[in-house]
Amino acid sequence: MDWELTGNTQSLKSIFKAAENLASRYDERVGAVRSWDKMINKKESITDTKKNFLVIIDSMCNLDLLFYAGDHTSNQKLIDIATSHAHFVLRSIVREDYSTFHLVNVDPRDGAIKCQRTHQGYSDSSCWSRGQAWAILGFTQAYIWTKDLIFLRAAINISDYFLARLSSTTHTHPFVPVWDFDAPPETPPLRDTSAGMIAANGLALLHQILNNDSKYMANALRIAKETIDLSLSSDKAKLSLGDDGELEVESGTWDGILMNATANNNENAVVMYSNHGLLVYADYYFLEFGNKLMRMGLI
Image (tube, rainbow, N blue to C red; front, side, top):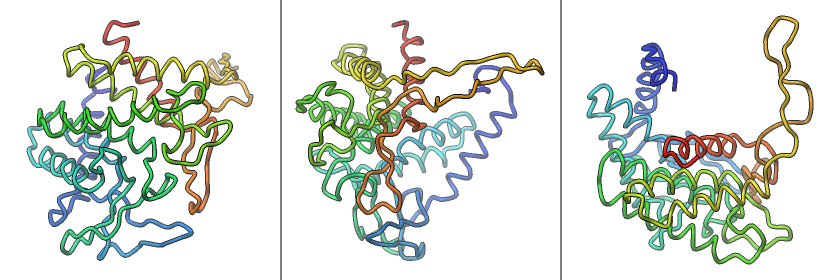
């Protein structure tokens, strides 16, 4: 980020402001940060924020912002909010077998769970692969900041579940995850490269936490290799120098680095997006994984 690279204090102020805005959605009665104000699909509509409080598994990867800002300003409140939210997600969204729901809806008046859904996955009882990946990365980051062994155990068990599901598949490139581990088999399989790359980042961090003596880096590298082999876009972006001296991207069909991403293939989704070539999570975490490998001296 700009602050760490250049020392630009304005960028640091932006981080603090973003963290404060996120923290403003925290509800002490629930012990969590509200993710969505509403959830609407073809099956149900949840819109009343006085009676509903929606939290999604993706939110685990927002906590890094709160921890970072809290650490840099000695703001214990931000750190406490992030820690409380992580505990809430662990007990409300992570199942006993360490698979995950996508979201939970609780009554903010008493904290009672009203329903648990897999909003972008196959079904409410299934394991949506990107949700599982968010959990791997999020709980690993939570442990890094807090050193709470509860979060480390969660990260390890959630990771082991993810890797076991990858290993149990029989199609080619099994470490490029299918979009939902419990969706009916398809030929060819419907994948989600974003799930793989998010998970790879979490596994790399877990490897470092465990003193570089673990199975997790080997599996992270296998995810990256199989993703490149199967899903690297053949359409390359070309830069040219424009008349004004500015770099321009030449026109073409290029959209993203990785293909085979699936944003939302739930049958009740208002709009279904599957097997497409531009999903920001896939490309961002692909590049971030490369950066991690460079920082670790592996490439």
